[in-house]
Image (cartoon, rainbow, N blue to C red):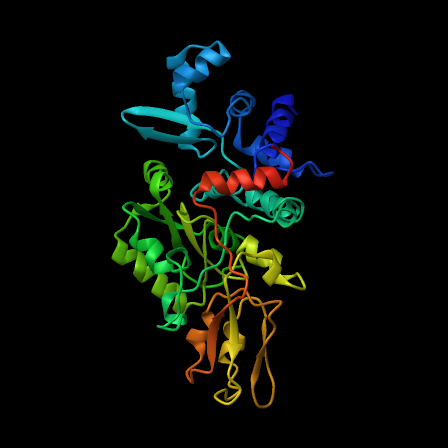
Length: 351
């Protein structure tokens, strides 16, 4: 195998999102499926700082026009990120997750899916689980919050949507790849909301379609009915909002096996049950993605170590016996995605 893949793997592992090595070498097989050796060399030369083709060409000693065509080809296939501002196009490196993998949503095959499914638990355990700051967090939908609750705008999914001027709706890669392997959970697949510069990238590459704020809110409402957990990017100005299920989502699947999932996510809420109102109907138990609710003969009980504050149980209860309470220690997300990844990089010892 070309040394270019070894070089790119090392480069990706030095980005905040990480790309740790395995004994099996499955991560190198993934890169070989996606990149040519020449593309791997070029990707390994890019940082997570936008540069024009001319700047990159000067640094690498190559022809800018020829290099621009190569960069565009790679960006079109979701191997690097491209953005435009003021008539100027820039390119930059992206994480494997979240980034390269998610950008393959329209370009999946079973071999790639199997390799990535073998690798992602290793990535989650060796990078995601080791940093205090995560790439995603959990927010409830407004319906699960009490009207008088004082909730910050960044903790309200509807307000996150309402603040966006550009929204693209894309397929959930987790449910799509599970369906391709014969494990379709039956929930909606067009549920990923992409914002800002990411939305333009998705639209340009045919990864999703632009939608209005009202349609985005309809997606949230449908997700609530289907029991999907809302996971926006971990910043006050997120670039995405994912609607996730515990059976397919790689994040939820991997934290679900922990003894205390609540410690592995950023959430400001926890569910509480009023035993006097509870009828022990078990509707909340069946809705919970983290198995945080147990129903006895007379009432339900919430395991606070497992509850991630998504609010699905509140919606499921017809008797008003479940509510979301604010945690004593409130989490304030980074102001933007740059701060998020700066924190992760520091926590991984990369800065």
